[in-house]
Amino acid sequence: MIQRYTSGQPIATDAAVRELPAETIESFPFAHRRDGGRFVFSFPLEKDEIVYGLGETVRGINKRGWLYRSFCSDDPYHSEEKHALYGAHNFLLHGGCGIFIDFPAEIRWDIGYTRADEAVITLDGEDFDIYLISGATPRDIVREFRALIGPSYIPPFWAFGFQQSRWSYHNAEAVRNVIRGYDEAGIPLDAVYLDIDYMDHFKSFTVNEDAFPDFAQFAAGVRAQGIHLVPIIDAGVKKEEGYRVYEEGRDKGYFCRNEDGSDFEGGVWPGAVGFPDFLRPEVREWFGEQYRFLTDMGIDGFWNDMNEPAIFYSAKGLEKALEKAAGLRGQNVDLKQFFTLKDAFGNLSNSPEDYASIYHEIDGRPVNHLRVHNLCGASMTRAAGEFFEREFGKEKIMLFSRASIIGAHRYGGIWFGDNHSWWQHILLCLKMLPSANMCGFLYCGADLGGFNGDATPDLLLRFLALGVFTPLMRNHSALGTRNQECFRFENTGDFRDVIEVRYRLIPWLYKTFRRAAEEGDMMFRPRSFDYPDDPVARECETQLMLGEECMIAPVYEQNVSGRTVYLPEEMVFVKLSGSRITAKEVLPKGLHYVRVALNEVPLFIKKGKSVPLCRPALRTALLDTEMTELIP
Ligand code: MIG
Image 1 (tube, helix red, strand yellow):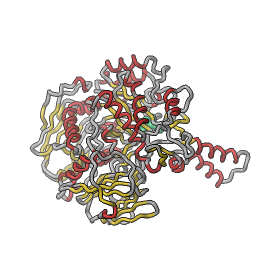
Image 2 (tube, rainbow, N blue to C red; image 1 turned 120 degrees about the horizontal axis):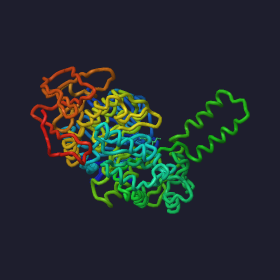
Image 3 (tube, rainbow, N blue to C red; image 1 turned 135 degrees about the horizontal axis):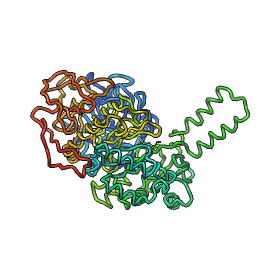
Image 4 (cartoon, rainbow, N blue to C red; image 1 turned 30 degrees about the horizontal axis):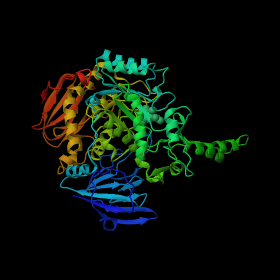
């Protein structure tokens, strides 16, 4: 059962695909009040109740005891004290009730942070829809909610293969070396990424001809090797005379504006940029068409970046800071002045002041950015997704985005952004999976091995052993960090063993994924969904249920040869390594310490269930998906 409550005149987000009759907000059953243009509501939290939801964000599967913020943010430090990441996934589930807030501005979620027994939710505005969803079980509530928001994006089959990325493979030779490195090590691979340096001066929909001479032929050659090239697309369009995309955008008036109607000028990788106003259907159509430049050359995978939007500086902000600096020239700069100057530059990026100064256009009228912030990246992805579907049909192009809001799950997947090569980020990825799934985001995954910082081979192997199960299985790392392609390390055989397991599981993973997409279900579930009455199984932040058959429990610490798991019932503990099954053991309900070598992938199969395996292959296209063996 779903009940919708409407307040004011909500801005259309297109998150819901069904139009439900609405009650007025006065009859909203939770305690609520208006507070200076904001709407605040609260509800009590029972002592042992678990609160799920909020999709891609920091902290645990159980969201209790922290303050979260729905405000799509480019934040490359995913540490515990943060409140927001790139997504705004406004769905919460607790005590038999799902709450979906359809609202594109900022929301603060105090989930037992100020008072342990209370959740207080503050919407930065008074025009919104709230849906309350009831059902017999949490899983039923999720399914009901997902029917409301429509079907999840399904990528092409090859997108389930292993993918290698780095910021950046600077030229054609670097890409060829990656493919050669994998092939020579006999490690399966389906895709190689092009980060911002493939572009001509970071101009979206251009190619640097010096680094990639005859790009079309190069792309065709890579495809002939069975590898998909996946270029990045940035949201900001470089301000440059003679650059067609910029000139068209400017002449048609498609960029976001300042209050006075002139184009807002931000600074990102290419320097000064215009931000296409993706909220306008005609701008989406125009921007979507730009991808044709690359699809015409056979490109069939994309990742959309910097679309929160990330703003390093604005022309206005930079000007002010430069003035401040100029004013201090030749003076004896005291401590206070020095730090004010430092902050003037340090606070330029993603500044609230800049966001507040941007205007979009909805139905011909200017709308302040803060009212629609969380729709921006999602609308960029929608632009691309709608173009791909129009042009090629469903399931033909791989697409995922950094920023997102519920609704964007119909157009593409997401990746979890700039994590670190930290052991704790294996678990952060694990915790985000069921939360993202609830909100409709099924095609997702983290930068395996970690983006920022230097990865060690053991970290990467343990990360990959979780990534074996995530629909997006991509190794990615930042500029200036240690090379972390699997073939770079001395123990390439270990990497082959782990990634081959992925390929053996792909037919089953794909089926599990499809079923979740088609039935509005989750692929990964918190363990409490399956064992609500087992007090130990209920609270768990390190193991997940996967499909109908399994439980997964990756090793997530350095220099340990295994981990403790709790089995809520008898299960078969299986270890997979390359084409081998290195262990198969029935374990009774209870606590166990299981040993897992670096080249093994642990899996726990429920009693009476089995998981099919095929033979590994170097590419998904070479998989004999019929050739199956059943485990246990
Ligand atoms: O400011 O394109 O999250 O995956 O490698 C950084 C460079 C911009 C952020 C993305 C990351 C990508 C990087 N980008």
